[in-house]
Length: 91
Image (cartoon, rainbow, N blue to C red; front, side, top):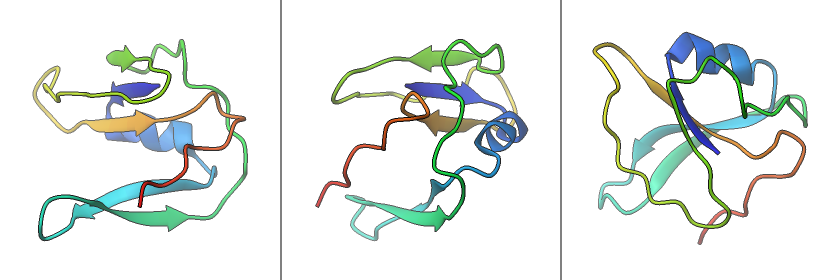
C-alpha cells in the first residue's frame, strides 16, 4: 500500500517501527538512497486510516506518479499489512 499524508501523520504512524526513509537519489538518478531506523518489527496496518489523503493498493509492482493533493509538505508511506516483511531490495 502507498499512502500520501502530512509528514507529522506519517511520522506518527511509523512511530517506533523499524523503517527506511528515502534520503536522496543517486547521482545518476537510477537508485534511491535509504536511511534505516531500527525499531519494532511489526506495526498496525495503515490501510483504512483516515490520516491519508490518498492511497494506492498493489500486489507486486506499483507505478506511481506524484501529484501534490494540496499546498504544503507531504510524505509518502509505502507499507505492507504491518506484519509481513517488506519486499526484498532490488539489486
